[in-house]
Picture 1 (cartoon, rainbow, N blue to C red):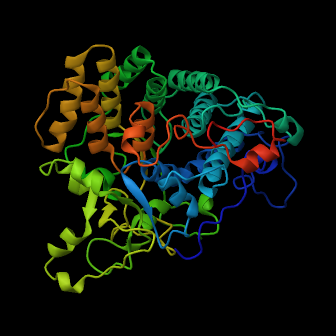
Picture 2 (cartoon, rainbow, N blue to C red):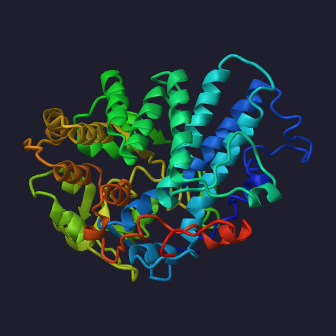
Picture 3 (cartoon, rainbow, N blue to C red):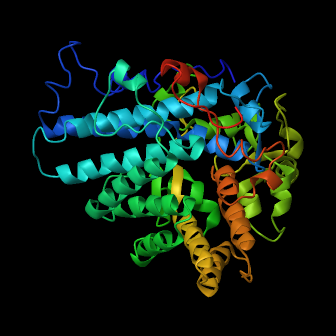
Length: 486
């Protein structure tokens, strides 16, 4: 990596006044503000684009969701390159961690942009306004869901922007209250949004229901999860595609398995100085093979490297292993001229494996710096995830045969035999095989109570949550309590 990760400050306090700066720039400056904005339908649409824009930071959630688990190590150029990721990998992270602060800031920046819309939602009427508000509320639910799964209870700010003094007097809300707001936003969004949209990447009824089902599952509300996820399944809108290998290619984006993804473009360059400013997906370039020279793939930064434990967990007959985890030496040996292929090993760690779902490939490379401008979309929720969540909820409710049918539909698509689903562990393992490399593993291990036995260095009672960034506590006047153990 060339310059390290240096991010502009847009945290909870930083976004109070600047949360809309990027997408509301006007010429001349200082002539447009909340008092004379939101005068046209186009103003609301511009604001909504700004609210979507913070989804670009999803690559960091993907990284941490894998690196904090038994699926990946941090990797990279050295242990001093993106130290926060290496701390998370070692379970030695504390309240001073750039990556965790970015998760906190970026999601609150997204919430602030949504609240800016909601604060002004009644200024004018126009056709399609209901759907626009529903999309905004979906986005707020998404950002709060990211926050609550990382940090637990967080300050809950709804339908308004706040000033500095008010921000210092807002306490952390309990996680139950944050989840209640997530549910409320998603129930509203699902009641208004259509099942499909002509615009790629927009929130839909299916996306709202799927995220709502996931929020229920995380809370152990299995009946609500099953009912909600069943609605997605019974809609007939989604289906598993036949070829697992094509799930993550640019050419096959927005297929029938896509419930919600984050759209990226390879047409706009960027820099390491502001990763949240990128329009391309940083993950594939960072996951790329360091100084690689050969066919199929492109060179990259060798981050988020799958572990031997993940590779060994797969049955050798499961084609998802190769589609998910690239064994670099086996790949090179299988090429016509292996002696002509070369790559380097980063000092941040090496396993011999690379994330084969989100990796830089020839033919999928954006503009310079192409480490940062991949056009590969991030699949936030795909239909296979919905079916596995539905299987889990059904098993918890005693519907074992339904759970088995759902799990084996996933295995059938992969081209492998069905298995008896006689325990929750079968479902949990299937989630690992199907979804590895996609950012779900750590949170699955935590919510299912497996983390302490699967993650080296994990301390029960501490590492279920990440620490609230200390700088945010300080900015709040020291009134927020820190999570246990930090």
